[in-house]
Amino acid sequence: MAIADDQGLDLVEISPKADPPVCKVMDYKKFLYEQKKREKALKAKASKVTIKEIRFGPQTDDHDYEFKKKHAEKFLKDGAKLKAFVFFKGRSIIFKEQGQILLLRLAQDLEELGKVEQMPRLEGKRMTMFIAPKKVK
Image 1 (cartoon, rainbow, N blue to C red):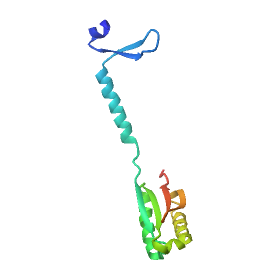
Image 2: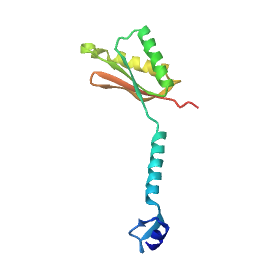
Image 3: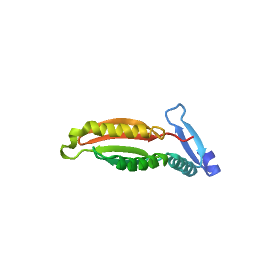
Image 4: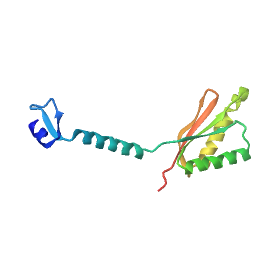
């Protein structure tokens, strides 16, 4: 402790369970500051994943499909994940095969831009599918 006082620094206990306990002479506030700075830099580098949604009906016709497909292409090019879903209203749940065909067609059309993360799955009155963008090199 005398050495730390002479240098105007702090005596920090590194390993208290060791015999004898391991200590280090350092400026503790500066150490905490640099640690926070490092954590903040790592947090900034972490990629933020955005999820964009596209909604279809079970009987979406070709023009609407192409229009929504263009939006999906734009989302994948921007690096966002895509959640495509078919929403069944009332008795339209009868057409779940059509909804699945529609989502698989979308996955096939967007094959060069993204890969299917989750195949079409029925959850209540929604059939959802996730597409993640391919990494651009």
